[in-house]
Length: 398
Image (spheres, one colour):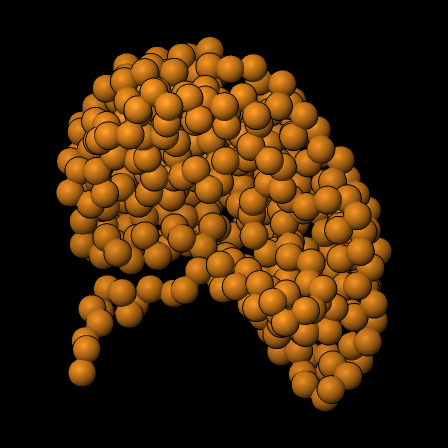
């Protein structure tokens, strides 16, 4: 009998990918499913980026690159961080990985020892807790409800910190909530973190450019914690390049070196062709980024307006990313037409897939039971039709 390791057995399956798979299976059977489960821009990768990738192939950029990525790409990232965020990083402090997910995992595995505590504000992206499990760390969840716009307070952070805290992961703009911390809100958290000099700060900023507030503040811009803050970003969301798998970290040199060592033993370099495409993304025209953000903001307004009219839903107005996380706890305990009982938000998500043919994700996967997540990274028409179907199916619950 084949034995699977405890570390893998302990991991949860990605709920977003699982629901997306169920959606794909139904579509293959001829069912008209609207998939709002996956966080993927529906726009094509801009043409100038695709052209750069084609040139890279023709110019034979087809061999191993340095583990941390081509120097030209790391220089482009360093210029981006300086010009857009006011951050000073040398190319040697930047490590390019196979997506932001790998960059995040590299950091967690590089700084967390067995038993170390990792603070994760929740609701949180599904993979953070699983990454901490792999590192044999201990997750300390800090919950923030829809009433507080899904943002933790300085007092909550203070209460969660302990002598065993090694790392905090903060995502702004947030997956799954769309919450964006203001500069003042971040400063208040930084004032707390400044008292704990041994805590590494991991700032997941992958949704930086899908931000409807008009401003963005990187956690690494605060001098009190800059020397122990790691920035995670990449091209997936801002440039509609999810499948290209290019993310990066910008870190204090010891962490950059540690993650390079780890990546060198795990995967080595990210795709050489995708790296050249990412370089073009950062050095080429940026009109496409604003155009996509404007479309997401329009869709945000549309989905909030429609969702607010569904009985039993409580919604807020997210400031970034492309997710809506409604509180659907008022629907728990109701009964579907086939007699099944909606006991959890997961039951409700499955009911919507079965009855409305709309794929969402159970909020429980994000440490937010009683909520469901919808991605509005889809067309206006799909949003209208999906919310119409959801409203119709929800009205059938008794």
